[in-house]
Image (cartoon, rainbow, N blue to C red):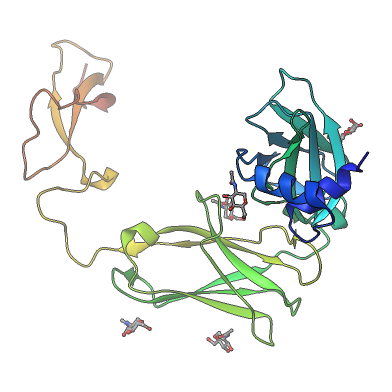
Length: 289
Ligand SMILES: *[C@@H]1O[C@H](CO)[C@@H](O)[C@H](O)[C@H]1NC(C)=O
Ligand SMILES: *[C@@H]1O[C@H](CO)[C@@H](O)[C@H](O)[C@H]1NC(C)=O
Ligand SMILES: *[C@@H]1O[C@H](CO)[C@@H](O)[C@H](O)[C@H]1NC(C)=O
Ligand SMILES: *[C@@H]1O[C@H](CO)[C@@H](O)[C@H](O)[C@H]1NC(C)=O
Ligand SMILES: *[C@@H]1O[C@H](CO)[C@@H](O)[C@H](O)[C@H]1NC(C)=O
């Protein structure tokens, strides 16, 4: 009986010990590759638990999990199952690496190719979050270049620029000797407006990241009003006021019906126009009783 590990190594084509090895390697090409996923896939900190799921599209007998290139775990799964779960409990620094999976069927003996790797990125709260600064002449107008500076106190590694609302970092850079990275947004547009934060990946073996630091908010002013449409900002709302004062109302109070209208150069089509909001306000008439 050939040990399972050797079958796996054959597939990587680093070892061709015997004829059966070549056969296994060739057959592997015919099997669909497994896919590996991480749950949760984001926001994992040291000490958390995560699950790696290897999805196989064939009836597999055995599923292997590779950690940083080395076989670390194996699971036998039933014929009905198409997923093998590997739980990592209490994530440590050295768990923050890349993972792959692979599966094998026995009759006939076939070994799949490796899945694509999955990176287990772990937040290590012992690293200080980087500080962020907006280096721009304000107000920032459309088309200007804006520099966002991040400082990580000489921890080295790689500094990442995150934009709130985007799951992946939008830029990354190695800091200079002073621990500063300058991210330039060339020719900003209103789409660049938003809130930014930084993190950094520490140097060394593992995929360890600092927590996200403080934030800056970039506002981008339009240099010209866009033609055709008018802005629907609150200060662009006018009120049509009609006041009806009932005769003999001596409370000094009545209700005014305020109809909010948005000044507009284009008339919205009636079908598309929402009902104007009606606001009731108390007004004093000052009429003697
Ligand atoms: C398996 O890997 C080999 C070598 O990289 C490749 O030629 C083959 O297309 C792969 N098979 C599948 C199903 O991905
Ligand atoms: C991780 O799993 C272990 C064992 O299942 C459990 O005791 C622990 O509370 C879990 N930790 C977290 C942070 O969920
Ligand atoms: C913005 O940066 C680009 C590329 O570095 C440069 O060509 C351009 O002149 C800059 N624009 C302004 C307004 O400074
Ligand atoms: C970023 O810009 C500052 C000055 O604005 C400069 O001192 C620093 O060296 C720059 N850092 C990098 C990595 O270019
Ligand atoms: C930005 O930072 C301020 C002050 O710490 C905080 O109140 C605000 O919620 C942050 N904004 C975002 C979008 O994270």
